[in-house]
Amino acid sequence: MTEKALRLGTRRSKLAMAQSGQVADAVSQVTGRPVELVEITTYGDTSREHLAQIGGTGVFVAALREALLRGEVDFAVHSLKDLPTAQHEGLVVAAIPVREDPRDVVVARDARKLTDLPRGARVGTGAPRRMAQLNAYARTHGMEIETVPIRGNVDTRIGYVRSGELDAVVLAAAGLNRVGRIDEVTDFLSVDTVLPAPGQGALAIECPADNAELVAALAELDDPFTRAAVTAERSLLAALEAGCSAPVGALADLLADGQTVKEMRLRGVVGTTDGSTLVQLSTTGPVPETHEAAMALGRDMATEMLAQGAAGLMGERAQ
Image (cartoon, rainbow, N blue to C red; front, side, top):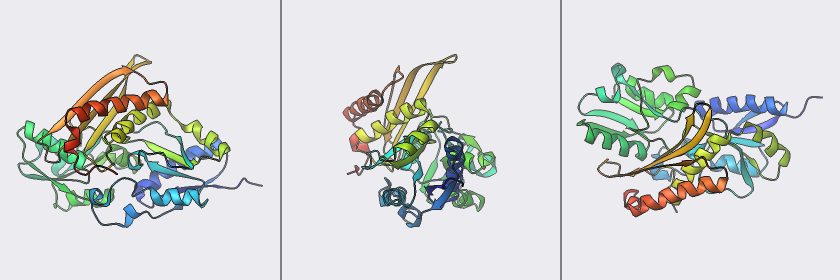
């Protein structure tokens, strides 16, 4: 008799299905059980409003979490950058697998790079964070671009470029990698140009906290370095009291000496969407060995950023 299949709750988008499929294969390998995908529609998928207007934080997550708590699915896969920073009662993030490329990328007409865009180029993005940093970069490099708020899946966004409606769009490298479209990228943006969203490129595998057997099985997919990095980034976001639609970028990267990881560098940025003001900070220290140490790293940086005026740059603060 074959073991009962584990039910994995996922959003219906092509990207969500692709990344959930990859996790399903990995979970099957560690548990020896088949995994079936259960498609769930979330408010973020059906709303046509811009993410910043519908609150950003949690709009893709709530329906998946409700399905978990009702027992309709056994575990769920989220893009970590969509996950609210507050822990959800009754649920646990059992695993954060090895992170994909965290960078943002440009898909532009005529295979152009960001620095090659024509004067007045229209650049589409759904993220105030990207707008703030792209506009700041343009200001300091004598470029003239217009950032245009867009929504939609990968097909829709790249479609704006193909149709000539926009000159370029900015997307996450990880998403394009997961749907097999990384070859359409015309420019990989250095994190010195645009810092990614906290947690970008990482996935969170969440399940009910009281299912000890499943928590233990899923934990085999956890990558401790990725978890330490994204914990610091998300702690920064939480301490700024900003939701995931706020213009906050953060990246913790590990500095290795040969094969040995020696230190972790955390960088953060908050800015006005027109790029006129940015608060940027960087700190380097030992790799945090506990959850509390990673949280403290992010909190300390947030305190410093707030002291430098970050609060006034974020518009509406998350409640």
